Amino acid sequence: MNRDASPPIFSVRSLSKRYGSTTVVKDLSFSIAPGECLGVIGPNGAGKTTTIRMCLGLATPDAGEVSFFPGGGAPALQMPADALAIKARLGIVSQFDSLDPDFSCAENLLVFGRYFGMPDALIKARIPQLLEFASLANKADAKLSELSGGMKRRLSLARALVNDPQLLLLDEPTTGLDPQARHLMWERLQRLVQQGKSILLTTHFMDEAERLCNRLLVLDHGQKMTEGTPRDLIANNLEPDVVEVYGKGALALAESPLKALAARTEVSGETVFFYTQDAKALLAALTDYPQLRTLHRPANLEDLFLKLTGRQIREDA
Image 1 (tube, one colour):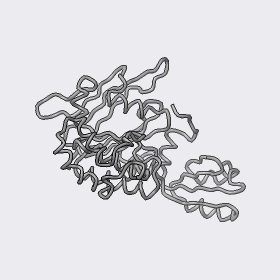
Image 2 (cartoon, rainbow, N blue to C red; image 1 turned 90 degrees about the vertical axis):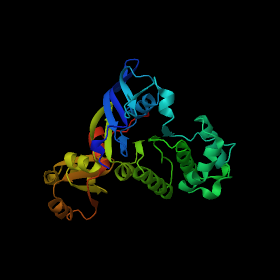
Image 3 (tube, helix red, strand yellow; image 1 turned 60 degrees about the horizontal axis):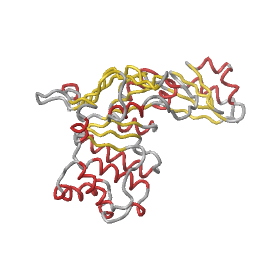
Image 4 (cartoon, rainbow, N blue to C red; image 1 turned 180 degrees about the horizontal axis):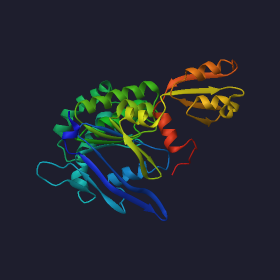
């Protein structure tokens, strides 16, 4: 699919939001093309959740507009004015499960489909394929108390697909899952993009962002820091080689002559990070410190995230 040739399915223009004297989102603009997964990453308090809430009509922006589904000769739908029409074509998976514990898996899908005014016959016809997609075909009659955390997240994803949405908004969909469950969710999300669905994904997992997202938007303090494909962001913002050094006495190396062998150094906890265009000289010099442990690796999205937003731990905002 040539995404550049298609108008965006979803656009945010000059969005801003203040709470009292604090600006939570400032002049934010981005868009999503049909069949594209856009990832939004940023530290706690960066404005991700507030942005999602404004996109869903749950918070009113102080400035800017949120537009959905242009085309067919009709103007784009606007949030919140066209909220009902927009939500009929959206699928939403929030951070926390809102499944009904009194219902079985199949009943959760049936009741949710009724919220869209879908006939029971149509919903029931879709339930088997939705459960199969979620790898829950043998759990149709199971109550939520019988499901693992990963199963519940997959059921939430299946429920978000009841109305066959064009666009999915997923807010940290794999938080709390074990590695096996996360990988299964990733495979399902990749399959949806291959089917032409568009996805807006917020995540704190950089490997998840790199695997799933065509483009990434990095937010901090409510503003766009940068935007682009994962590969381009890494190439344009980071040195290609990273050497991590840790162990007793490692921190002293941050201000030692070894510093001259790297483009830049950072310290986090008990680890020194050396960022370099070519690690050979640095690795050779580190053989003089056999008591230290080293890890040589390519730069990744986590390095980008920390370079742009800092290593300081922040409280939830």
